[in-house]
Length: 251
Image 1: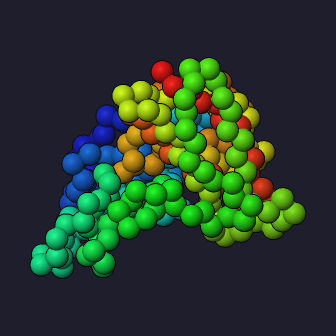
Image 2: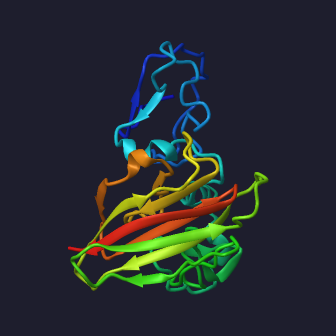
Image 3: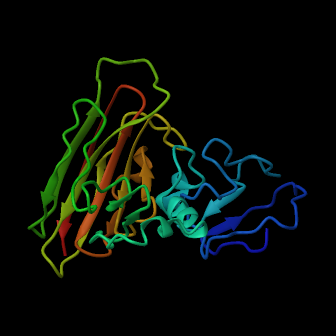
């Protein structure tokens, strides 16, 4: 491995022999990439001290996003499309007006390939969630006083763990030129390291990356500020019904 990204802190661990040709192809490393060497279930793998993470996020709000295995990150897919020059399949088709960071879909040149937190032909819509009882919505933030989004998704009568998560989405928007602050006020019921059963993911504006994944009371009260006038939220449930409270306001 030829470089250690600045977003992580490597704790002492038992060294493994890695091939010298093992390189990062991406120009940067991101928390949610499948290329990360940790997973949520193996955060302590190979550690000399079993009470310390092997790899720790510099920004601990992103620890649960490290090396996730639910699906490739949008940045992974985009990188592979770039690496194999997939855009050449659309060389004779005008580039559609994709909302950033969407890009022309090489499998459907008239539409855009979008991060999962956006839907529509041009990544301009709230996606339709797969969870039952999903109350996903676009919410207009207009006040500098705290308001609360009460989100829920999933079957409250189901107690069988599912192999794949179902999800639901919310967008919080503010007037142009304003930003949004959010804080978790009521966490999901299923608190576990890595958040495998229920979680909310809060993306503050780097929409080609995963956001902060939360499911525990330790996240309550932390205030986060958006990059621009949009915050995207994904709720995911593999067990029972996800419920949460998220405060928001404009600044």
